[in-house]
Length: 365
Image (cartoon, rainbow, N blue to C red; front, side, top):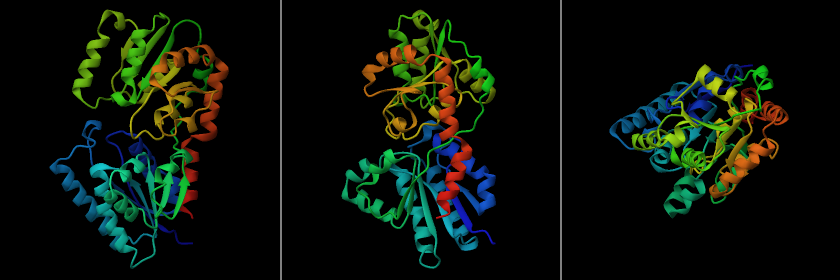
């Protein structure tokens, strides 16, 4: 039987944020390409994390380039299905609105099934700011199948009722963990606490640093890894960790990947991610931590309570309670049984194979 044609318009690295990592995997998925005749178009917008949200001439050129690539694909490729990584607000929303006019026009001439995949949250806030934003969002989502990361994000679309269906697709991450390393992890002596994400204050790295300042426990060492959004935050952080009281219990690894990243996960005992990032929806870093058998201390932001249960994590509802959360995690989750459970929780729910299977199932509607 002839394969249906699928046009995928998505973010890809760089920069290496969550939506781009998922886009990288989708573009490389053999199972997807076996199921469909695929064509991929990359949404190019920012070269670095720090460029996200900024407006410059290059971005106007990239929007025009994206529009004409999509238009050409619609005319020549003629897909039956379109998968699109959608943005929530700001300039990115208006870019998406503009390019969507190409396939909304295409719909008049050829039936097409549309799927918008949201990797973030904030629709309710955006449409609540003005009647214009609400009307434009309703137009943008008309007759579209929504793909959300978890049922916890469904209420974000309560004011927007023009979509067709909602599907839930939890993220997945690649399994790089060595099971023997998890079994050999020692819980005696010094405990290593890891923050690994983009170094953005609202994602919580500064809260972790304050935690390191407050704790008097000598058997704790705090590790930070990630790329910077701006140089001012970087200089502030580096100046603080150079002070004698922190130099002995804090290590900054910078942006890491590959074997260095794997080694850092393997030597750690607890993953900490006290995020209040406005767009936080389904952090891949937490899934990575679980894959390495690490329990997690985090907040109730986005879908994090959907990812974690009391056997694999501690959730704090106020950042002021972070010290108590750390104490709870250290007293109840520092053992092999917890590590084993975290690993199993990942394998049962958040592997890339499960993500791939679920994505194809959704696209098959």
